[in-house]
Image (tube, rainbow, N blue to C red; front, top):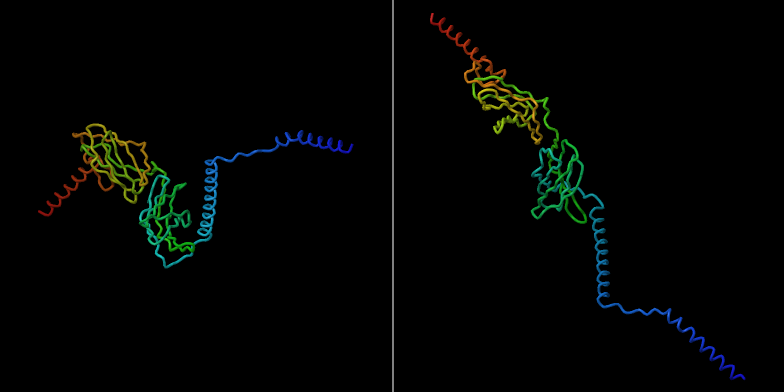
Length: 297
């Protein structure tokens, strides 16, 4: 009887294993090996990311060492040279150019404040474009910097003034002096405006121009006239390039047979309008003849 019981237990155990084996097989995951090309690509991408990480760490260390503190001042170093600074402009850019032999870079200062750095080329030259946000005067200077990791800075260059001027000349500041009638085929225009401004007189394709002095005085001679009435427009442009067209027109009448002498100039030093010159000359001539007659007596 005992043998039969063992046989039954064995059979029962075998049946249990058989009934469970399909479930166990379904839980087993069989992985296929990656293709050789895909494995290479994975390794390559991983190497690239590792290299980039190393470069970023190296750059961070370099930047920390380079910029962790201001360079030490060395008064024995030679100051860079400012070769060119935009003197005046009606735009928003000031160009700064110069040379700084023996340095690695230059610090750029505007109105005594450091605003940026710029590198040197192979000839120790530098070029920098400063963008202004409002008109006014700007004092530009530079200082040379060299060395790593211990950096030194030399004295600043002599400052140069740059002016951003966005305002056109005021019409109210312009005065014009000329005669409105003449018997000559040219006339002269005198007046005042901004200092160092250009004044242009135009009629059709004809143009006559002149420059005002530092005080704003100008004089344009030889402006051609046609017989009859002549109308000219006036344009004033300041040294920054801002231009204004005057509302006032110049009107001069030219008559070759007219009685108005002179070249149509109204000027306290040249009384040549409305026959004043001939009258003055005639009076002086009569006085001269009178003096000769008295002497001869």
